[in-house]
Length: 267
Image (tube, rainbow, N blue to C red; front, side):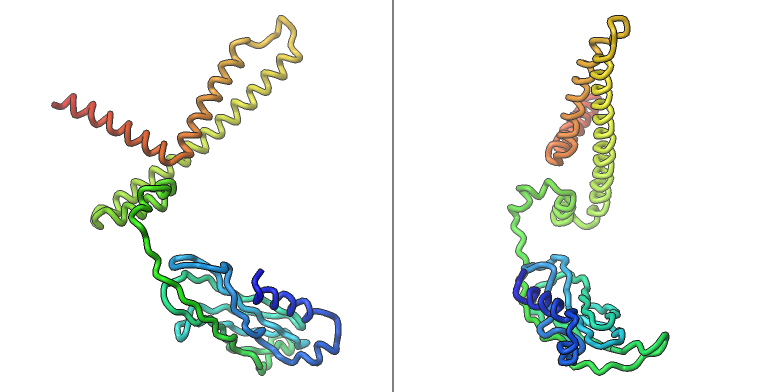
């Protein structure tokens, strides 16, 4: 936990202590000083993170309003809030990080106290804007070597490679085929796991039947070894299906032999 988060947690603890003297001296309503932090301590271009801020309400009435999150003069998003009396509340928005210099801060608008059901009174906010948090995000550099390593193990990487290396007029068709293959692979994976679990239960049942059976009612002695062989092949199948490099490599090999067989037949 970094210093800012620790400060906020300590502030929240002291804010809810049942000491009227502390509440009487705490007239500041709004943001806690320097109150901007992120879901990740470090991030880079393209990351999806969350920006947080923290609102304190020492008043005996409910405080509500809207927090606007800015990057310099650009509105990143806004979130409505309602903080119960003598309580504190964190407010956040999602943000996709872009490269460049950033100055992130939050601002409270339309702050009001709940006087009675349906009746509100404008609130005077002493801290209606957080301290500005400056951050520089470097441009992300994608190495060509990336495409030769572990990126082939994820469907999103395959999609990125196709988009980067293929003309746009056929990209959509290839990506569509890739997505369909992924759906088929997932369905086969689920069905194989289900079948493996079923065989496992059948083996357990055969072992139980063997313990309580007599010579006349003994199960087929060849059935259990057959089930173990079936279990072995299912395990190998799952290994192939769950490893995308092996799965797509074998698929490409099968397609190659089918095409070669067809071409040999034709010519």
